[in-house]
Length: 319
Image 1 (tube, one colour):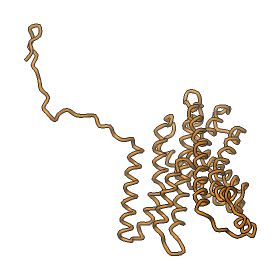
Image 2 (spheres, rainbow, N blue to C red; image 1 turned 90 degrees about the vertical axis):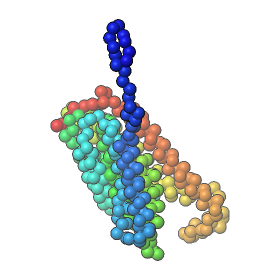
Image 3 (spheres, rainbow, N blue to C red; image 1 turned 180 degrees about the vertical axis):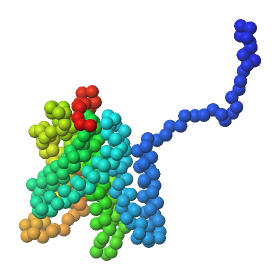
Image 4 (tube, rainbow, N blue to C red; image 1 turned 60 degrees about the vertical axis):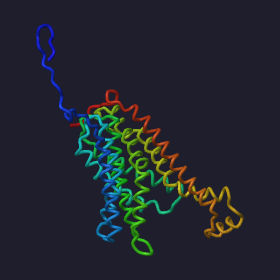
């Protein structure tokens, strides 16, 4: 005991082991990614060990949706409080499916031959379809902010990417030698790495531009304006560069190191044999173009996000 000013203050001791430490939990989006990745790896291993083809759809679904869902969870934590989980879910599912269906119909009808205009056309079609889906899903919000527009836009884009990746993974399963699980895994791994700087990024930029038009609308609703069309063209060009990177990378090695024999075969419409140097050059150029496209998109998105402050861009809307 301790005596202070005539009062006796009992001293207490804290039993060992009763001191609690604050545990720092991982963010929810991190837990989603790590848990989903563990499930995907486990499913792949079990499929390889057992040869059970019934697990292939599980591999495709988890692998295709893991990264998009993770980034949607990350983006949802940065909204202005108007966007609800139900609306985010609807944007991911409905926006993704509507985008894939609309793009498939329009591309099959109007874009048959690969060319510069074809790549730009694909970019315009897919981005326009996603923009329309976002516009429909964003009706009746109480107010519109650039930040919410970017989050909802990213959600629609990641939904599109998830369903598109599932289609690519499914097609990769079938080869001339039979079913190839390794092709599926490689396709999903590659698309998972590239997903964050693809459809989600492009539609996030468009979503911010769409919601920004509400600031100048009389009723505070998004409207079709020249600025929105300008952003659509810019995003479509980013999309076109992404799609064309492989085609551009094919020609660069021949332009730099092509031999007369190779050019003669090309003029005859035949595919020439390539050297190891040309193969390596193709890989470098292809990835360099993808990296350039990603950096440009991220720089634009970062600049738009800095402007997306709720007090400056919040506009009253519907219910």
